[in-house]
Length: 440
Image (tube, rainbow, N blue to C red; front, side, top):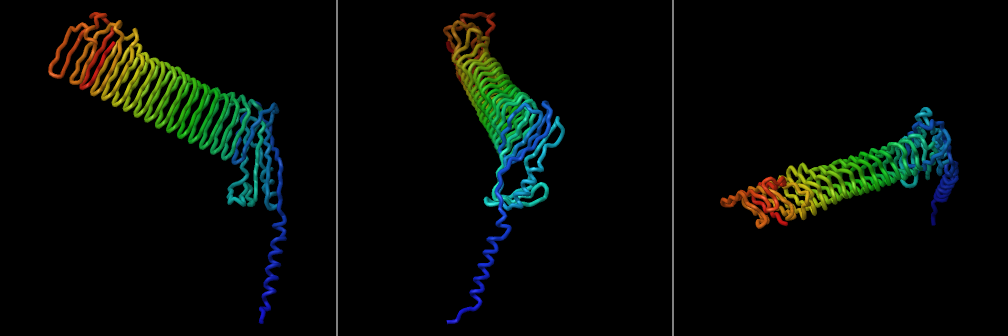
């Protein structure tokens, strides 16, 4: 049998090549390191620190020293040269500015590409490295009294109480904090924040969740977000497809589309709703306009609507109800203290009871239905002009002064037997193809 004389040499060449690769200086020179890098700078107790962070979870702790210190616990694994170059880039990080305005950015690379096994980086100094593993955790020590500005991406922040002002810009991260002593700005995107106490705030949310224990007066703009606050001051809001749940509030004013709200007691309420839902506790005067919305309330002052379209309003008690224009809406009041005044088209309204302080009803309606319950002891005058439809009232308790019926039209004037021509309480009705029922 003939053998290829070159075959053993070929196997030997492969073996030599493999051994050469396996024992090459490049592969053998691997390095795994854990190191804490400390960076510090003096800062005035009333100064401002801007902290920019990318990808590294950070704890922010307060102390009584007159300087700031960033401790970066670094874990790196890769080629020795690349690990050393990365450590060098990290050690070059520093606080810039003066003691009144300090800033630091923990991002030490220009670009990074990860494939699950390696992380290729171009460092800020221009060096290019490849790491098998890298992990960094930060601890930032600050004086409690400074103002802080945090710009954070892809990382979690835990912060102790501070007494100064604060600004938080969080992207795809989480913020867990105590109390903030000064005015606070929160700008969250794809993020979550939990804080204890804020005296005053400006909040902007996009697809984010926020939980606050106590918040003073605040302005909020939100989209696709959830807001949970136990107690707050005055609120101005602009909402889109959100979910709000807030305990007690001061004055409330804002607009919303496709949002749901649950409020506790408040001082007053003003809104512009589109396809939104509101459940509110006891409040003062309410003003608003709405379309395709549902509003449920308890005891309120004067309820004034500029416009209602295909809505549902349900209140336990209102002082008065005034609506400039309404179409296709339902109104249900357990009790009205003083008056109802509405221009109506194809609506339904029920008032289960008017109180003894009743002052009047004024209706201009088409294709609508009203049911009013007025105690027999309450005196009132009635003036009605109707065409088609139906008008029912307790005629046996009524003194007619004018009653003209022509075809499907009725013209009626008079007063209850408990009243007189001088009675100030008036019911004025102008209706077309409507059903109006007045009962005791």
